[in-house]
Length: 182
Image 1 (cartoon, rainbow, N blue to C red):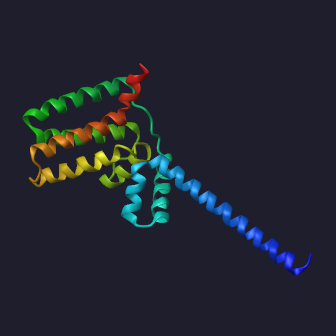
Image 2 (cartoon, rainbow, N blue to C red):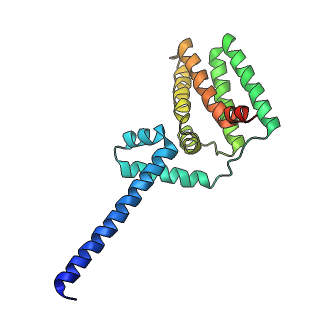
């Protein structure tokens, strides 16, 4: 094989390796985009760098894959549903207290499912792996709850927080999927 043939062959190999690497990167990006939905865009926007954001999302996925995330047993599920009904009923007379109760209840459900319940941002990151559509509801509800603690949330804000908490609560309990299946 002469030198020009070896150079052409080397260039072809380099191009093929580059093409395979590019395809694998695109596939990984698409898988993360599908898995995380709007959370994917939020993290990219927040980080400002797609590679860094995708590394963070992949790390979240690995972290959560190590947890024993499981459905809630029927009896416990019913107990949580009753507690939620009581929380919503409480909203009429004591909206600020109902928001605190909703936050505690969502945290209990997360824990019952197998999620660790460390700091709020880590909770949101962990939940985003399996519940990417509603994790933004959790963040919004928490922001309103914090504003409420500072005396900066009105009744409409609190109503919106309870709606956000309910969306995550239902998703964590998988109530919609079970109702359709029954």
